[in-house]
Image 1: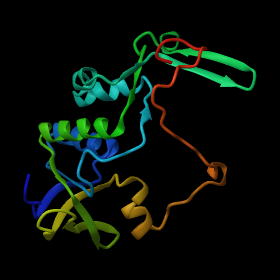
Image 2 (image 1 turned 180 degrees about the vertical axis):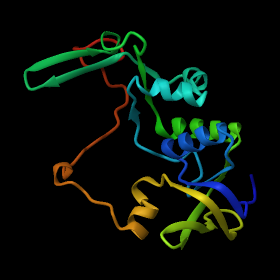
Image 3 (image 1 turned 135 degrees about the vertical axis):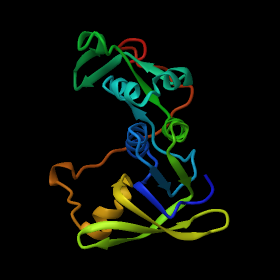
Image 4 (image 1 turned 90 degrees about the vertical axis):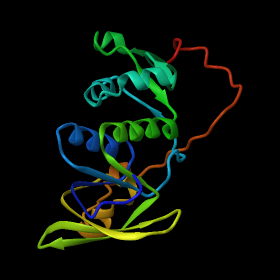
Length: 208
């Protein structure tokens, strides 16, 4: 798609897994869906370790065959080390219908889901940022947008329903509803890194 429409039934902000999933499910039910994504895919994102329950979502989306064919690392379970103890968690022991999942590169995985949304009829516009949202009473009704690449065009799109899947940016939560709260329980720090040519730990099992 090259021109953002002036109106749509459902406007989705954000083209990550949440946005592309919601958009695909709605367009498959016959809704007119437009999705605006600020970045141009593929874009960098820290990798993800999926759980087997994701397979049901892939089936609902009709994307499971594409995910399987992409070549992501299969994940039959996990090995957990805690102090001097260790556990093997094998998914096949938990659910005979969900025996594996995937370790995915998010840049590739997110693009696969977004391209699938396009193939299902979602009107997807990458490199397009929401600048403001207008309301009728308490209900959002239209949004102004601006291209972050190319001709830098701007415009406005009206909608019946809005789905804010903008993740950490939280367009609605941070700019309008002001209702984002951070529980003190989760005030912690995570560290991560990448290794090349590293040996796998001796414990665990293949793919854990």
